[in-house]
Amino acid sequence: MSLTDKQRFGRKVKQLRLAKGWTQEELAEHTGLHPTYIGGVERGERNLGLDNLLKIARALGEPPAALLLDFPK
Amino acid sequence: MSLTDKQRFGRKVKQLRLAKGWTQEELAEHTGLHPTYIGGVERGERNLGLDNLLKIARALGEPPAALLLDFPK
Image (cartoon, rainbow over all chains, first blue to last red; front, side, top):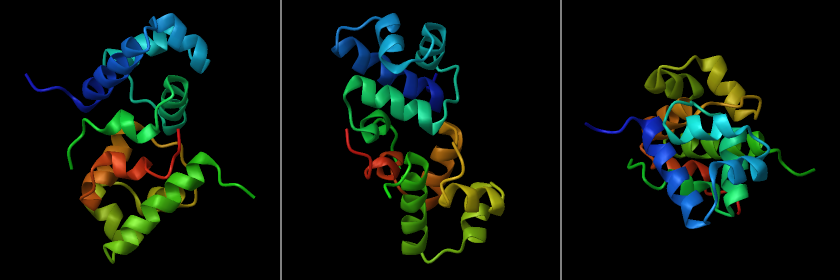
């Protein structure tokens, strides 16, 4: 079963969040996004916009490109 | 006048499109997106979703992360 793009993205967000030792609630707090939204992103259920992608990257202290490194050409 | 995030992203798409020698219509054709949508993205007027970001990157033959390299941490 191959991952969908959204699942692949969500897995990366979760990986980076856990590396910071944060809960989804803490990531939500740092982004200003709702915890259920963060949960949906991590489960691959959200086709998030560029603005929210950047909010998540910046909250995690990552360059935005890092969130897309798992995507090949 | 600093660029907005959307303008920064649009500038990168335009840069990569021109490097391929494509018109906006040709990029639209390769992505299945509408030419006016592509124009809006390049002008920084669109908060595009992850799905369309990936379509544009793949059409350009770029790893998706390349479209976000101009964004610092």
